[in-house]
Structures are given as C-alpha cells and as structure tokens.
Length: 404
Image 1 (cartoon, rainbow, N blue to C red):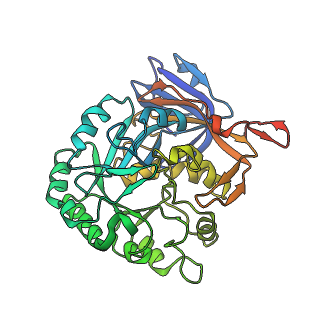
Image 2 (cartoon, rainbow, N blue to C red):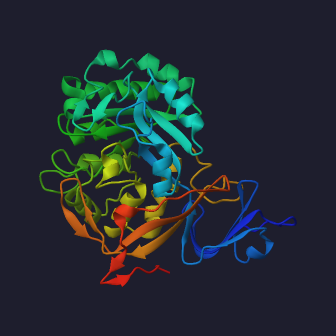
C-alpha cells in the first residue's frame, strides 16, 4: 500500500471498505484516495486528508469492473443493448464489444456509440465484414459461412486505423454460424490476429467443429469464450472430465472466458470443471438483446452465479477487473495502484435465497448476491441502478444483511 504526501488534500477518500486489488496483492479493510482523476494513495487513515470523504464501511471496493464480452453497438445491430443501461445495472466502468461490428460498419460504432458514451468502450473486431448482422429474437443468420465474407485485409486495415479502440479479432465458430466453412473461419481470424499481433477471441458453438479442434488451434493469449457451455460440444470429453486438449490449451496460455449469454453457461460443465480445479480465467456476461432478460442478465449477476458455485470473492473480482484488463492489453486499467485511472466499483455482498438458473433450465439455490453501491470513472461518481429482477433479498424470511 502506498501513501504519498497529500499537502493539498485528496479530492475524495473512500474509507472503511474491503479493498480487493488483485494486481497489487491487496485484500484489506483500508482507504482509497483519489486526486485529479487518479488513484493517489491506498492505505490506512487517509480520510483526514480528504476534501470529500465517503464512508463505504461493509462494502467491497474494487477496481472498475470490466465486462470483456458484451454487445453494445446499440440501435445499429439488432443484438446490441444500450451500454449506459448495462453499465449502470452491473456497476461497470469498461465494456468490450465482442464482434458486433466488422470492418464494414466499425466506423459507425466508434463515432455514434463509443464517442458518445461516458464509459470506456473497446471492441474485438469481427473478422466478418458486416459483423453480427442477423441475430435477434427468432432470427439467427451466420456471419461466417462464406469465405468471401471474411476479407482479412479489410479487418487488418480497420484495426490498424483504430488501435486505440480495437483490442483484438473476434470470430464465431460452430454449427450454423460457420456452416460448411467450419475451421476455415477460424483460420481467417487467426491470420488477421497474427497480422496485427493482437489476441483472438473465438466463440465456440455447437459442432462441427468440435470444441477440441477449435481450442487446439488457439495461441497464447487468445480467448476461448463460452468456455463452460453445456452439451453438446462442451469442454467435457466422453468420460465427462475436462478434455486433454482443453488442459493443453491452458498450459500454453489460452484464456477461458465464461460469456454466459443465452446458451453458454451450464451447471454440469461448470461444476465438473471446478471440481477438477479448472477455473475460468475471465468472467463476462455476453449481454445482448436476449441474454439481458435472463438467465445471464449482466456481469454482476454472472459474477454472483460463479460466487455461488464456490469461487472466492477475490477470484471473482480479479476475473472481472484485473485479468480482463491484462487480457485486452490495457494494463493501466483493472487495478488501484497509485497513478492508475480512478476507475472504482463499490459493491455490497448480501445474503439472498435467489434461485439461479443456467441456460438449459437447471437451477441451483443461491445464498449470496453482489449488488452495486457506487461507481467512479476517472474519479467521477457515476449513476448506478437498482436490480429489480433479483429482489427481494431475503433469506429464511428475514431481511438481507451485509457480509462484513
């Protein structure tokens, strides 16, 4: 923890919360000070030097949450949702769009959504020229079925012109999304990612191709999203254990991302993976026009679901802040070190008898939920929203109470 001199005082001090900062190895009840939109100090007894002091006792003070798999090219793509609505509801400071836009329509995403949002928005550019153009309720048209739809040179050129906003390449692989082209779409996406030296995020859907074939092609730093999808085509082999190809991918540095969505989180897969010690690297929501209505809802709900699966609170926060920042190669984000942008999410963990549901209808009784308290972006207080779909927060007929 660092406590530089504050002769002029800090702009704001958050005092008394449990600070969870994986990058800097902090898990302690302490204070966080902000000056000039940056983290100025983390340590004990900083409140006396704060011009404004917020008592967050009993709450969790974390780096600003990062949802590394969203769809927020709002009103221009049929699957996308309002980024402001999602950020307020799940206490985000940063969203990463996972391939809603391709080279053919990214400029509109940048000019009409990213630049008008107060939140940080980045993107994985879809190798498919039109992006995800045919996804909605009752509509599902694959954007990677024809090689002609995947002009690698156009993808590369668009990334080179927008490296401040584009963090990698996205491709959806499997079933009707790729059709007969299959692994050919993954080959095109890898060609683009290699050309720009950025990570690839690949969706894994139904076979063909198989989960094993897809994950075996990925490079260190690439992201397999929907990692705990249910059968068919899950991470489990015929023996119902994690496949050797999946473990080999992890050993060479492939990252595994939850990306709950409407079809990609199954309790059977998740519980088996966790029982074998195979945890996800990243937690994300895959929030879109259908998933926003449940059972995934958003990042905070997905974090709560993993918490109820037995992951520790520090791990769940790390998988939703520090690790996505590093995965998208923006190390300035995702931590509370002195000099970092003052992106902070304040949460409260409450007892709740909420019954969670996976994408195939399997339910699990929960005991706890994460709820938004406050969000600061570059030190500015942002609005947070109530979560009516998770109320009432009761356990055994009693009002909820905070975990201290």
